[in-house]
Amino acid sequence: MLASIAVLCLAATHHTYAFPSRLFEDILQARNADQPVAQLAAPHVKRQAPGITPPFDAAEQYVSNTGEHAFVAPSGTDQRGPCPGLNAMANHGYLPHNGIGSMEDFINGTAAVFGMGADLSTFLAIYGAVVDGDLTSYSIGGPVSTLTTLGGLLGEPQGLSGSHNKYENDVSPTRGDLYEYGNDYLVQLSQFTALYELGQQNGNSIDLDVLTDYRVTRFNESINNNPYFFNAPFSGVIASAAAWSFIYRFMANKSAENPEGLLTGDVLQSFYSVTGDYPDFTYTPGHEAIPDNWYKRNPVDYYTIPYLSIDSNTMALAHPQFLSVGGNTGTVNSFTGIDPENLTGGVFTTSNLLEGNNAACYGFELGLQEAPDILQSLYSDVTSALDTLSSAFQSVTSELGCPTLSSVDMAQFSQFPGYTDLSSDGTY
Image (tube, rainbow, N blue to C red; front, top):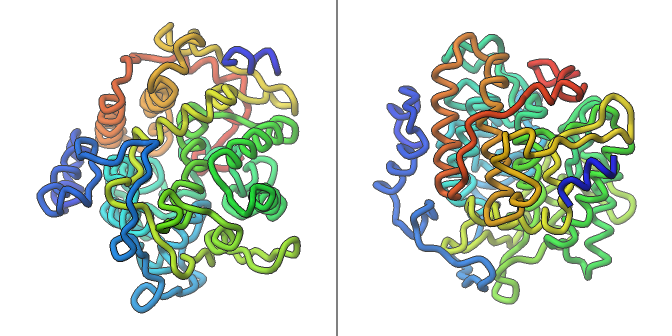
């Protein structure tokens, strides 16, 4: 196992339903036409450079949790799932309360609540709608029978809770591995408590260093405890990195004293629906809430794909195993990583993987190459879905200046039961 790891040491309706191959650009252009440039943070918009302290504007960054955005708990039919931020948005009316949103809902909501850049939110909205929904919308929780069969779906869209190895991945900060726990959407209090404790040891501050250290712990726990652990090409390399960095980048409360944000234990508890005093915590599924007196990122500092690339690269430089596509082979402590050179035909290698944006490029390019394999289990005709998804991936890889990857050797995944034994509904 150690030797294997050491290898690395939506805007207008007509846009939505036509499924153009350039949907990504269409959405961004529509937003450009309708909104001030300063509020878009699209790929071409001038923004605050990483590493430079952003400004703080209380009026512009305040996120309301009162009035029309007062907390309303979900009912038995409302969908809530593995993403605490999306759950909180639905509970406060920044997404539809039933937990089923259109691409435009997700793009607008994540900007309003967290300050997510339009390039990143558009990509994630398209990806979610294609792999977890009906090409136009998706559930932040489980399957929804009311979603249409538009696009030749083979069955009900499974939502985020059924997106294991597609969107959701093992090694979650607070959710358990699917094979080990039987679900991937409920908070495991042991994991939450461990993260909380690390923040307390850091002066009641959970920052990217704390999260990176805990990510190593969780990665090793998956190797040690989950015989089906699989670090998937896109969900493991990109989505997992995003899940970890989003905690600090989005949940940290911004202020004049801390313009980049301070994530304290009480704010973490609110976003994860955890109440009580340490160590006697109680978790109430689906009750995630936006804290009082809470402020998002400044519009000139919206979190974009290049920011995510920087954060992903920073974590991987410290711990290259995060980029190791592979997994356990049916027993614990059997992790086998795939050499990126063999997987990509030499486009990515152990010597160039941590150069520039290559770490993020590796994940996004692999995601594009595995898309047909994922989609064929979801759609009777993958053409529209694949065109839409390919456009989104290619826009990202173009933005990052990625090398071109034309194919990958998917046969190498056959040794991992965490990949081969997964059903199309996201269960084992």
